[in-house]
Image 1 (cartoon, rainbow, N blue to C red):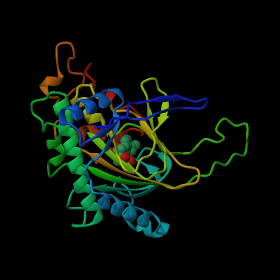
Image 2 (tube, rainbow, N blue to C red):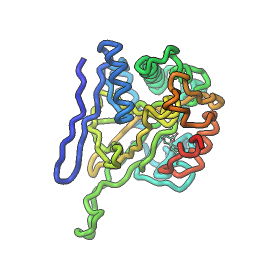
Image 3 (cartoon, rainbow, N blue to C red):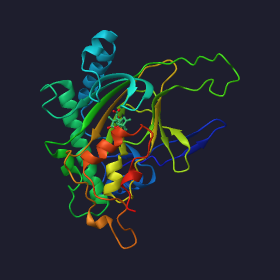
Image 4 (cartoon, rainbow, N blue to C red):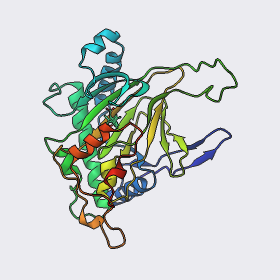
Length: 316
Ligand code: GA4
């Protein structure tokens, strides 16, 4: 198994880190330990040999590009995002905007045409998400190995797929001395993901940045052969704060289109977000109050994209 250890390169302008890359074909107990370490340190990691067939990814990407290449009027014929459907620039309900157009879909088979590129992609990526969640439980030494994945496998799971298209945004500098000159525009502003786990695939155009513990923003090198996985708010809660739901954002590229496809693995709306007893110890008492996903989701959608919603659910 090859694991690229995180390396930092200081340049005059910015810092880059290589996220840990976990090879899923490696020894299971080593893989699960590496995943736990990455979730604790970065809240993000990449996976290779992930088992999602290349042709399923390629078809999904091709259909996504075809969709976004359609005239604006036609795209708008798809239901407008409320929050599901087609959206352009507007994110959520609280006035957030970004240089992005997107399609947000419920992954429930009721809403997705059978044997379509989208349904094949959802099925394969859900399988990967469940496998990763089982590996996390194993690495955390939780005897009930499917404690997290069970929530995603449930037929009522409230998981989403989001196709994001970031059109190229040239850097136009009227004032050469301005501090914002030469800065890429924000496609999707800083936030954490509310769900359990996010599995992201992007084309070879960079733009994703993650926030490190010291607040520094670091770009993630794009790699279409891997999936980028990140911990969501609910997994931070279910690991009693051991895993971190890290803030991230996406910038546009100045001359190339960036396409990303995100699968947000969420539990059923009525699921109680329980912390496995192994995660609570006398030295690490419960950090969060109990709540259902419906309650948490409602709170998330009532706030701005960048607001810190986990604080609302912390024990006094
Ligand atoms: C972030 C993760 C997912 O893209 C998403 C987003 C959702 C939206 O775009 O409608 C939210 C955002 C996301 C978090 C806070 C709320 C809800 C926009 C927003 C202002 C689909 C999700 O589930 O939460």
